[in-house]
Image (cartoon, rainbow, N blue to C red; front, top):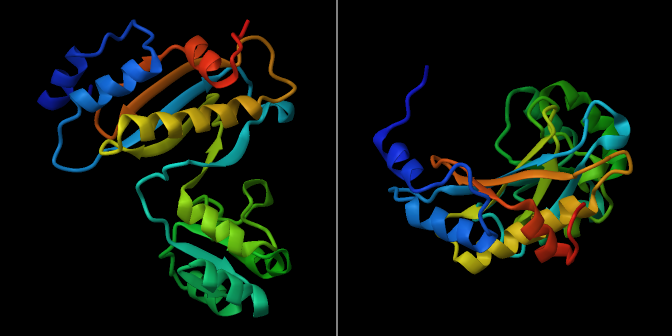
Length: 239
């Protein structure tokens, strides 16, 4: 049985595990209890009222956080000709085609996100067994297979994140750093939750937002009232 350290125990004492906090109150509490010698990542976990085993209850998409994530992502673009130049001008860290595919097959993986033009997917497809398990395979559903590579690179660099429900019906997404202001964290949080609400699948029945929890890298979770955030984002109360 794992045991938490002294710092975690002290933080946990300040959190009422049975309470559903107002969003502003939750972020204030998180910033108050987290004391560390590094800049914690702030994460959101949203448990949805969906059954991911059914195709009509999948929840997946991307959203550009207004204040970014506090992390600079390394972007690789598979493209040729004018599209390769466009990607470079947009700030891609690496641009290539068959040459980069060969490097990846030999073990090179120094990037966080891969983008590809549609005409390159026949070549990039050879990397499925390498990139797929690591979540690095370009995908049209996340906007990483596109002819508009310049826009894709700029959005990723600006703070675009992917959300995807796991087999337990939970979405986990980083929304910034503990050093962010309360206004920045809440703006990012609201944008994410708004996107997840809009992505509600037609097959979802009953309560959609079951629980919402925020935490930092090493902190206990703080539960936020789904009803309050629904009102804040949409102006409507879920029934």
